[in-house]
Length: 261
Image (cartoon, rainbow, N blue to C red; front, side, top):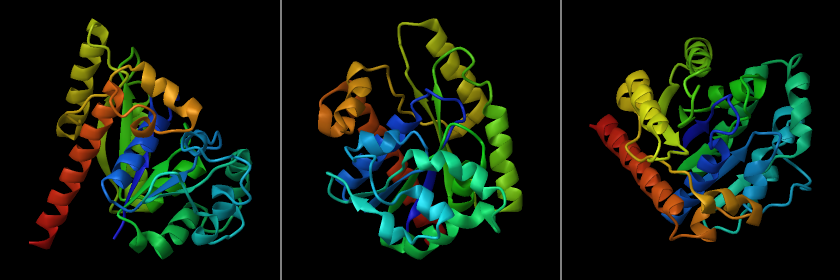
């Protein structure tokens, strides 16, 4: 049964899409059947996987037009990785969902029909806490939070955690925090090290050991429509995302084993 993970932080520019795209491609590379859902109107995860944004159907149709998932999902250049692409139409979904019946459950209803077909379903959430993000949280098992190693890194995290707790209480009792991943780390600065400490104090044992560094190749890869593992598999950024993916898979396999006992 597929594990559904939302990658979310309402603060833009924290490496959210980079994390979602690269984890999805590495899970797929490791033989896990993976589906990436681009729920961000900017569609950066779509173009980051080399998919043209002029697609006929997109995440918008899932949320608004009652289109079935299998009609929207398309193959990517990576074996075992499929995507539900996004287009700019999705920006209008926030407003259109306001008056919809069962508006927070649209994505969950569609994912329930296909989640058995995948090992991992990764949702790249928009950088806001609106109805699209609520749909993602309601449909997910957990939320992965990328935190940038910058000043004000923790600002706004309280609001995000509060939203997760509300969704857990009202709409999705099983929702939990998958973990926090530190991104754009620069070992040369005191600030990065200070942020690491603050995030560990805040999230305690929910912080991944793997830290994602600032890396030129990571920044370049999306403009070529490739995840880092395809663009430059030997780069430091690629190796760190490989380690992070291993850490996440291992944690989830241990959890699954523990639940069976």
